Structures are given as C-alpha cells and as structure tokens.
Amino acid sequence: MLIHSKKSLLLAFSLALFPCLVHAQSFLDPAFSGVTQYDGWANLNSTNFPGYGGYPGSTPWPSPILANQVDSGDGGFNKTSGNGYPLSVASGNYVYVTQPGGGTSDPTVAVGSFAVSDQTPVSGLKNVLFQSLMGGALMMGGEYVEFASGIYPVLSYNGGAQNLTATYYDLLWEGELSADQGDGYGYLRAFQWDLSGIVDPISSFSISWSNTNHAQIYEMQLNQSDVFTQVVPEPSAFLLVVSGMSGILFSTRRRFNRK
Image 1 (cartoon, rainbow, N blue to C red):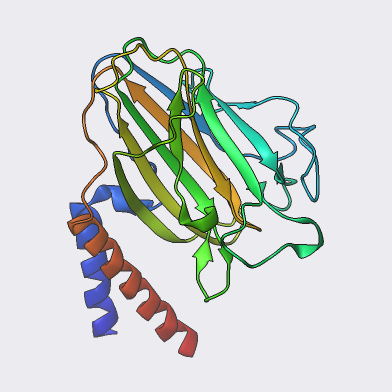
Image 2: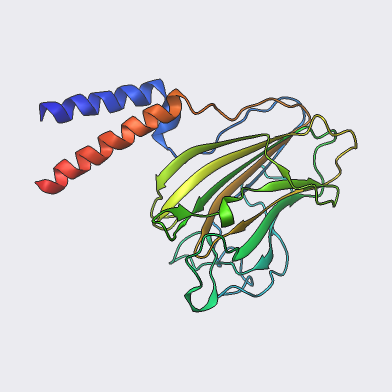
C-alpha cells in the first residue's frame, strides 16, 4: 500500500506539472497569431452523417463531410477513393476503412484514400497544422498501422499536386482509446507545414492520405494562419512523463488485477 501511495503521489505531481496530460488524447492548441481559422471533425457516425454508405464502404460519398465542431470554418473531409464509411453510433464514432471479404493484413496496401480541404483559406496563408486521431489495424509483424506504407499526409494547393510533406511532425500520443469513440488502439499525430516560401497566393489547399485495411478515423483538427510559428512540441519531457505515467498505470492495474 505504501508503494501504491507513492506512485499515486507521483502521478498527481506529474499532472500538476503538466495539466495537459489529464486527457492524453487532447489535440494541441496552437494559439496561432495573425489571422487564423479552425476546422474540427468528431462524432463521425452514420446518425450524424447519413447517406455515406455501409460495409464494405465502396460507395462514393455524396459530398465532403463539413467540419462539425464549434467555431469551425467550411473545411471538408472527403473519401477520394477506395473503401470507408461512418459506423452506427452503437459501433463507435469513427469512419471505418475496410475491404470486402476481410481484405488484407499487408500494411503496404492502400484500402481507402481521404482528404481534408479548405476552398476559402485565410488570405496570405503561411501556416497549416493538421492533427489526426486514428486507430490502426494489427498488421503482419505484430504492429498497428493506420497509414498505408507508413506514408504520412501530404499537402497540395491551388488545385495542384505538389504533395508537400510536413515541415514538422510529431507523435503526440498513442494508447487505448475511450469507449465512446470505440475501443481500440490509436495514434494522435501532428503535421505542420511552413508555407512561407510559397510566392503565389494560396486560394485553396488539401491534405491527403491513404489508410490501411481496418483503420479507423476518429477525430481530426485543422488550424491555419497567415503567420508561421512552429508549435508542434519537441519529443522531450512531455513524452517522457507520458511514458512514465503509462508505466505507473499499467503497474497499478496489474497489481489490482492480481488481488
């Protein structure tokens, strides 16, 4: 009991130092300066978005799913090819990516391709931050994979196919997802693009990617600004504390399960 009390004190101390760790899945708030715009997607189920097909999800979507979080702009989330559809509320709040007949466990196969886009970005766009909370499927080799071939989202603008990789990337969190989203293992990733070097005005942009079989798209957030400031944190003390907390919670859970 003394050991458990010490670990509880350590956990409380860590949360006091890093209050953002109370909810490890929380999206990064960039607090961009200048002219900004925000779009957020969550609760991606067939009740909120009817008409987007069912299993195996090969039906084309009728239109992009508009951002549905408070203070969102007019950003859209669309399936561009392949399979994927919002599940029923009873199954979970996410878009499920699947192949007919069970598909494949090969993580190099792109089962569904998607994009988020904005046709009316801020004037003088210089800064884009895209965050995705997605669940991976257990693939060959025993690892969870959500992006096909491990290729992360790319950005194109003005109707082109520049396919720019993110200037900065970080894995903000990984672990078990909550029941209201749908039980599974997920990754919260942040991708940031510095567009300051682009001379031509950007009148539209899209961020595209492909998912593997049985991947899940839970929540997404898109921030933009006409001023570039790097906000994605370095993988430093934040991740060290998260790792330490995970070990504490796992150890405590094992001890209780043994009683």
